[in-house]
Image 1 (cartoon, rainbow, N blue to C red):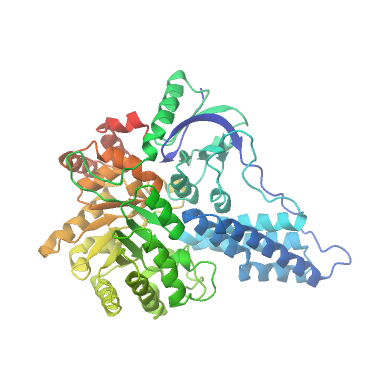
Image 2: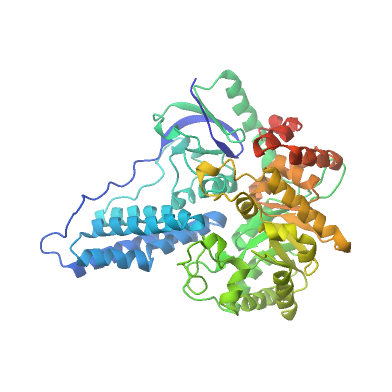
Length: 561
């Protein structure tokens, strides 16, 4: 039996045949020149038409997608019209290159520039190469690279998946995802969780496996086995039996002894909110409003924003909806708000900080939120991302008060906010921990990089200590402000128990994770959760913290989580 180990990012145990992602579009011949008799302006026109076709195709797919998939497709569509990419290619055409060779070389240059910027911008480098291949395919009149067609379900294996491909996976055909690259917060990982697909990333060597062989994938353990054993077949069968139970949440998050832990959903728009409500979510813990701003060169009007927000609010009448103000910058650049030339965007002008350089956008967004809230029955809470100091929290609270917003809050994703939580929370009504960014900033590890996957784990004791400090700060001097978690950590049932033990009051996650988290929480009393939290804090590293806690929760093995 041949075994592979990676990072498990979405639970599930399945057996199926392997299909490898097709080979990428072949590179045009080096130095390929314009065909005889072809004018540069004609080649440039063909290139722009191909780029527009790629944009339109991706945008069309985005219009029928939702949540993370929709955002990924819209961002990739924007890249197909990127002015820097197209201008560079046209310049090469005018110098004599063929259209295919010009976009190929221009894409390489732009991708290298983004990669060298590091952080979030390095992730966009992959998008550029994906778009480049799609434009070349359009110029050739051949299908773009993508997920293989199959009459029967299969396990999809690849070096990594392009964001646009990941965003449109068909869970009826793809049993599980396995990649040799990527990290726990890559597009592949996040969308696999949102679709409920078992997934393992950073499993080195799997992209060399032959087609059509049978394999066993354990998305919780992060293992892949070729020629599955009888024990593994039994485990896959048991998972299939449990899957129906883990797909239904009764809308009541609680521990075994009745301690309430509301389980909320992360959403990006009205379609997501309706789906989350149907799955039993007790409200929204993270409404990512930047989805309303993508695919635009100008700021949406107050009325346009209000209409988008109201669609989410209306899905949860009488329930809490936590809205995050615009988190532009880094991997979500907006032409009317952010500076794409920043040398280190992850540490640059993003989130709340855009109000430093472009004042007015945040206030108009708050006006739209207040307008939508006044026309809805939802209990609307509003939080700012990338808050670093008490002064920033106080300023945000003042802006909210001026617009009539009653419950302002902050995202705790910068370590300084966790370390000074008591002072920060003195000015606002609540905090929500964004564990994705909090982890990468605490560990100085880009969350998109596969080689740093071990460092970039929310199980890191240092990250858990920051969670503990935030909760402790919320109780100082009579604050008693609620602290939730809306990062991907909340979707891990074992880690959810630890977070509750640390004093977190609510958990927000992709709606498909609600039932599994709820099922595990109902087996653990609050005092046991507190003991497990202390156990995790005492571990020397993330691997031991996770292993020690999971060993105390046999229900995880029973459920295949």
